[in-house]
Image 1: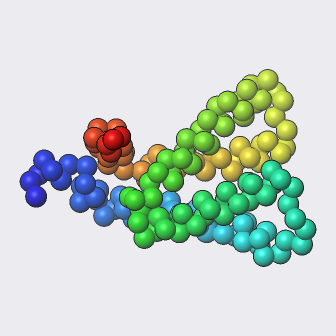
Image 2: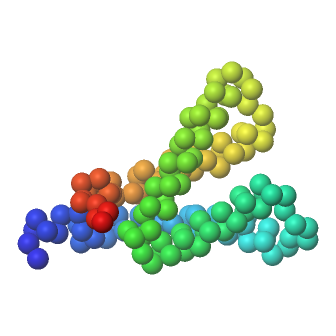
Image 3: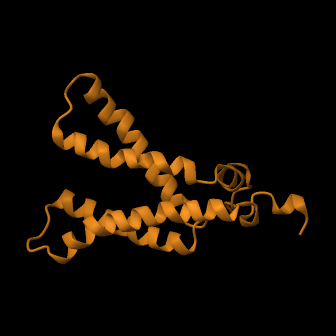
Length: 142
């Protein structure tokens, strides 16, 4: 394999970066596991529609992050999605509420949970992301 063909490959991502990435997945797995699993196990009533959707999406995210511990580069789109939706929510929902002085305790709790996303830009191997999701030729359409 030539040096040029390795560009953007998993070999290009340092072992340290892989461990940092796994640490990010582990943070999600442990953090969500502590809050999510008791909710699933000890649930005595059915959830309302939106609460059920949120809990099931969190469970799916948790399960994909478990896979990320083993396959950190292959599961990167999961972390990119997490960074994207939390960033959008913080900018579009929370920031205007904060700027207008209308931030309530419930929203502030969500803000605090979403601010944990700030660690992910430091663990994501951005050169790998750019090489594999922006520069790399896409799959054929026909």
